[in-house]
Image (cartoon, rainbow, N blue to C red):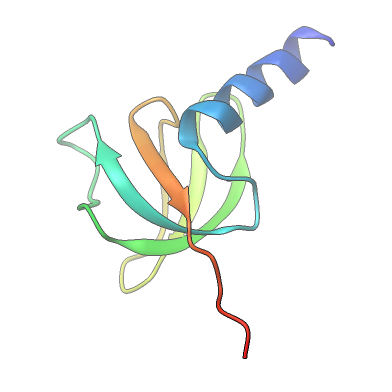
Length: 78
């Protein structure tokens, strides 16, 4: 694995969900991040030191993947 792959894996593990997954915010370590516990959305992308989130009722924001912890929301099937 090259260094870019290692950084992407670290960001993915730190944030807690894969790209494209629906999430719920379970921890926010930076008071400057406009998220609160329980917010939901979709992880759009992971880049070098940032994660792009589409947050329900807040729009798209960029956050440091090491300062926010998410959990995957499992969808129910009928």
